[in-house]
Every structure is written in C-alpha cells, then in structure tokens.
Image 1: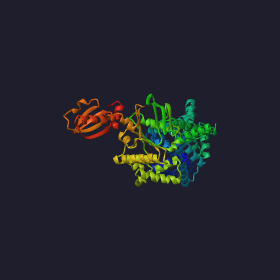
Image 2: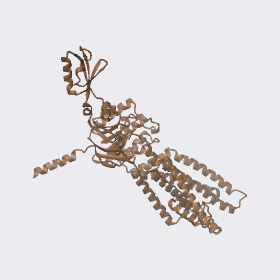
Image 3: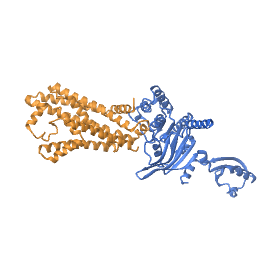
Image 4: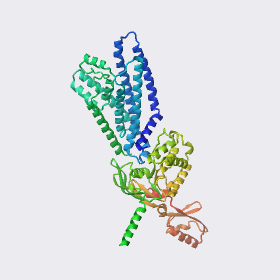
Length: 283
Length: 318
C-alpha cells in the first residue's frame, strides 16, 4: 500500500476508534426515526387535504435534509480542524514526517480518509431519509442519488477549506472560522434571495458573489432542487416570478455546469493552497 | 599510462567505498522571525560512532535535529546526512528518529504504531513482523503490545518511541532527549540499546542535556550554546584538558603543600588532599616531590574533571 493509502486508512480508523462514526450514526438514526414519526403524522392527519400533504412533504423533507447537510458540514469541520494543527502541536506528525513520506501525501491521505467518512455518511443518510419518507408517505424525490452527491460535495468543500486552515491555525480557531464561514455563506444565500425578491441588486450581488467565494450554499441549493418534485417548482414559478422569495429552502433551478466547473476549480485551488501551506509550515 | 589509470581506478573505488560522514554541516543557520536559533553550526559525525550533541536548554539542539531531518528549512549553510542533502526523502528511509516532545496516536495500540511506521518505511510483510517483535522486545514492551498507547505512561511512550526509531535497522539513529521521561532502569536500558546500535555499525546522534548520559555512551561530543558549537572532540580529550588528583598522605606536618603551588591548587577534603588543575603529566613529579619531602603516600587517585564541570566551564558558568 502506498503512503497516501496508509494515511487515509489511518484517518478512517481514527474516525471509527474515536467514536465519531458511532456518534454520527446514533444521532442520525434518532433523527431519521423522529422524521419517520413526523412524516407519518403528516401523511395520516385527517385534518389535512391530500393536496396539502403532497405540498408539505417535500418541504419537510427539504428541511430534514438541510439539517443533515448541517450535520455533514459540522462533522467535516470538526474532523478536519485538528487533522493537521493538533498533530503538529502534539508532535504526532514529527515522527511521521521524519519517514520517507511527502507532506502532500499526508495531507491528501487525510483528505481521502475524511472524505470517505463524509461520503459514506451522505450516502447513508440520504438513502435512509428518502427511504423512510417513501415508506411512510410514498413520496420519492426526483433524483435522490444526486441529492446524496450534492450533500457530499458540500461537506467535501468545507472539509477542503478546513484542512487548508488547519495547516496554519490552531484546531479551535480552524473549527470556529470554518463554521463561521459556512454560516456566513448560507446567510449570504438568503440575502441574495431577498435581493432577488425585492429587486435590490446589491443584495443579489452579495448572494451571487458568496456562492463563488464559498460554494457550500450553491451546492446546498443543488441538493434542494433535486428534492423538489417538478410540479412543486412549476407551481412556485407560477406563484412568484421573484425567484424563491428569500426562502433558503427552495431552488428554482439546479446549479449550472459552469458553476459546477467553478466548484471543481475552487476545490483544486483550495487543496493546492493547503498543500503549499503545509509544505512551507515549520514543524 | 596503465599505472595512471590503475591509480585513478583505486581512487574512484576508494571514493565509492569510503562512506560519507553520517552527518556533516557547514555554517548551518536557522532564524525564526528575527531570532537566531542556530548561528553557523559546523560539525561532522563519523559513521559508526555515538555522537553526543550537548547544550543547555534553548541552545538550538532540537532545531539542529529538525534541520537534519528536513522538518524545518535552514536559513543558511549546508547540511548533509548519510551523503545526501538534509531532508532527502529516500535518505529518511535509513534514519530512525525519536523526537523530544512527541505523542503517538493515543487510539492505536503499540503494535499498530509500529506497523504504521513499518509501512511508512516500506518494509516487507515478513520483515515487518520480525522488526515489530524485535522492537517490542528491545524496549521492554512485549507484554503491552496490544494495549492502546493512550494508556501508556510518559516513560512507556518514550520506550515505544525508541522502538519506532529502531525499526528497519536504520544507519543513523537520532535520539532527541531519549531518557527525559525514564526512570533509572529505563535509562540503563537506553544506554544498552545505544551500545547495541553502535555495535551493529550504525551511528547514534544523541541529543541531550543530561551529561551523565553522554559520559556513559558517547565517543565524541559537540557542545553548543546559543546556536553555536563551542567545543568538539572525544570525551577524553575534552575532559583531559584539566584534571585533578586525590592524595592520601601521612608523615608530614600540617599544610605541607603550601610550597607546592606550581603543581596546582590544593584543597583539603576530609582525610584527602585534592590537587586541582594539575596537568596529568606532572602527577608523578608531584608524588616524587612529596616522597622527597618525607611524606608517605597511601593513595593517589587521578580524577578527570566531570563533564558537568567542563560543560559549565565551557558555558562560562564556572
């Protein structure tokens, strides 16, 4: 096995041994069960018409998936924040980097290990939640696999940024900054939607620029779009020409290919910056 | 013409056969944000020797070690390790390193830590098993092999660190304060391990501020202070520069040594008379002079200056 694989496996093992995986699994199972109960109540409530149920279930599913995307983002930040800085401070990396291994191999190995955890979590949580909603209410979103991929991409983007920060800042500072940036990006998305609704170009610009600076919100909107039934989108379009009315849990269109290419460029640029930063770090 | 070629060929062979020094630095410097941690360190460590790198805390010892391993970049000067520029990736395969302040992954077992490092070195599966067993046995952790490192005391972690540094039979073993967390038994064990490493032909670079350590195992030492080498040489040479001799003399009046100032400085310590700062070659002359004076020599015990005294003297603290 090469050095990258060795570090990736070590990182995976750490996530399992430190009970990060177990904690995420426990809380997710609890939340999925809770959502199953909620969807069941919603679907079988005599006081609500079937039309209202059909409109409410996708919205509720979007809310739950948003919560899971928040868990993915938090997990990515929490796992990546100490990945470099804490190991430098404690001296764990001293003995590792004295071996015939490149620093880039260590960082890429860590990214791979953590990304595997996030990918597995995104896939499982998407599958579970969509499965539960289908089982309870019969609603299946248009493209659940793409939803899982967007969820993973959002986590992977934040993971990459957090790893870059971790090469320079302490673990706590890294975690705080990464979560704050994630929150700011989400808020900027809401501000942008409000700008679109009320035709305030400066607010609209803030939202659009933020989507390019940190693409987590843009990707989150992608996941939301593929959770919405087409009828839902058409109805919303007919109701409002304003593009979502400032609702952060609604998307009129999927991310464009140009935007997805930008996300790839962003990812490569931030990963490269992390590699250069770690390479230059004095231990 | 043939002879010229033959001589050239021998020289070439000698050049390839004679190994480069284990460590060679020329005016090595390191500056951290305006503070000079190392100011032109020049030293040579021969293959197969136990080399003591001594100095007070903050002298720049750990910085020098990190430079040799490529963990930090030099601000100036040159450093070659095992014939390659310091930090060379392939050369690091032949180096074992025990850091001063370190921790292993607390959630791994001792065997898993060793296995990780065997993989990073690139040892074969068969050799990995053999090396892990040997390392655990050598550092006395065979019975704790499957225990999590997080449950280990600091001393046990240091033992494990030493085991990790010995994996793959490295040609150069760099030990940065290897006994700082060990009890006397552990220190004794480490000395035995260092001697065993030297006996198999490897070089040991021992970074320590514990002089007793260096006195026990080092062939040569360099003393550094404030980032600069202030003395280098074999221990005997370093300590032989000045010495003292303890004498037990009877049959003479009190303070008979008053006229012997030319030999050194005399101090009465209990029943002994200590002649300090005496040149070793003058000891027989002193004994003869005492006998000529009518004294009866009961004991003569030459004493080298302790490394600690010499160390303090070099640092200008004595």
